[in-house]
Each structure stands twice: as structure tokens, then as C-alpha cells.
Length: 186
Image (cartoon, rainbow, N blue to C red; front, side, top):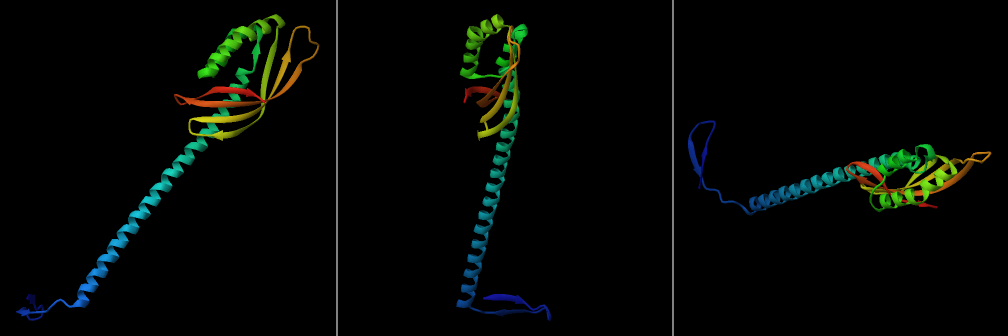
């Protein structure tokens, strides 16, 4: 039994209406519509969230490519250039651009081969990056292909010799700085 206040006359009246089958069907339909709408809204929110995080990932990857490419150009110039008169400083500067096993390898090569040869020949080598491109990239590691010209002067040479090299350089992000972790002459 339902009590209804008649707004016009203000009198109370009672009515006994049974809930019809149509009313139950309408309520069930409304419930289904609400559930479907909630599920669709949640799916839409999840999709928007996924797109947001993918966009941030792609932005971070693009930034890694840009930063590592710039670092590779600078590091290649420092690592592949030297002057027999300032060799210790040149090697120290180049070593600061390296990391991991490559740092150990560079240190060993610089002391065992580069220092005696450059000093004996009074060699001056100036590297200049003529072109560079990213081969592959991740957020913390980037591989770069570099085209490097090395102008080399030695005591007794009548002319500067120009060597044109291709170098593949792997850079690894260490403490927010891109350092050289591998160099391969191609």
C-alpha cells in the first residue's frame, strides 16, 4: 500500500497499486543501461590514461634521442682528438666522457698505445663530426652512427692528412648524463 499526498487538495489518500511486470522490466533495463554506461566510462578513462602514459614514454624517448645525439657529437670530438703537447689533459677529458668497460679499455689503450705514439710522432689529431644519426634508441641507451673526419699532423709530414671514418658509438645514461659505453670503427 502506498500513501500519496494530493498536492492540490492537501488530503491524504491511499492507493494500492501493484508493481506491474512492465515496471520491473523498465527498472531492469535502466539498471543495465547504467551498468553499461559505467563500464564504458571506465574503459574510456583507461584508454585515455594509456594514451597519456604512451605519449609520455614517446616524449622521453624523443628527448633521449636528441640528448644522446648531441652528446655523441661532442664526445666523439673529444675522444678522437688529441695533441701531443696537451695529451694528459686530452685523455682526462675524453675519459670523463666514458663509462663501464669502455672506460677501462680507453684508459689502457691511451696509456699503452696512444701516449707513446703521439709523443714520439709529435702528432696532433683534430676530429670533426660531419654527420650523425641515431641507429637505435631506448630511454637509457642510444646507438649513434657518426661520420668523423680526422685531420692529422705529424712532425715531418709536409701536409695534413685527412682520415674519413665511420664510427658507431653506444651511449648509456649514467646519473642523467650520456656517456660513451662502446665505440666501434666501421
